[in-house]
Image 1 (cartoon, one colour):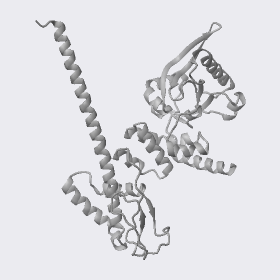
Image 2 (cartoon, one colour):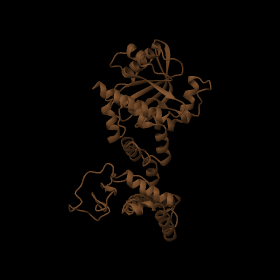
Image 3 (spheres, helix red, strand yellow):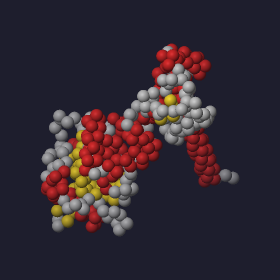
Image 4 (cartoon, one colour):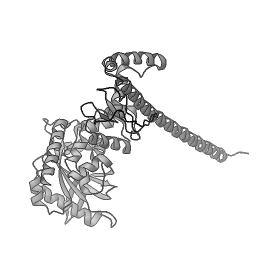
Length: 384
């Protein structure tokens, strides 16, 4: 005779089986969705290639390219349904042009058109010269595209970024960090690339384009400035440091995304005591990539040398009493409205693990940051 315990065991095993089957099916569906999305992206790249090749068969054909796209859109929509509007076809054409290399008539090299040219007829052709017997025709050099890793929605954003280094950076970060389309938009409009670049030397800026954001040393944390527009606090409204702290805690997930990779939240108003006196660190984080504590103090007034001295004390305390032997030295960050580099350099020793970082309560002016970055790179080249 079955007991209640026996029935419970059977039910438990049934639940385990159900959970395993559900997990397997969900994983399979995710893989299918990923394959479908990537197949669609590669397909759109090839559609763009075909449109470009068709338009560049001759000057006369290029002049009525709009009519060709309109007709193509109508016929594809009749056969396949939505997704092939004129605008989408133009997007596919732009996608191909952005992720390929072109030579226009004004920049094309002198070629001997009578020379035989090896042309591969596959979609992944590394070189294709189109109708090189006709004068004033675009010569298109098509390099095999990088392996696409994101959805079409992501590439609709990426292909509109003119700076190839900046575009590469966002593509790497979106892939590595699994950013959604909205997260990619936010990081682009928040000028993440420029803010990271302005906190680095020229060599490190080049690494951003090739490797994305890395976390190998304390300076890799820094952004100039830290963008906190998601807190919903206006510059013109009077607020206190505790108001700012409360707003950060209420939007902690987005704050961690803005801080960067590897951050874990530990505490707010972390108290420690010595000589009978209590001290409080506004925010305590741990970075698992750097393997160290990161202490943050919030300052809405003018930064003073006393603020820097206090942070030095906090860092010393953590290094002596909290840090484990396998961990790296604690990092201290004073998050302030104006960081005053000269004051920091004069107050702290060169090897101090303490930094002043500016924050902004609104999205930074992207054009202004791009200009600053361009000027900074030119200035750096002059110094070299």
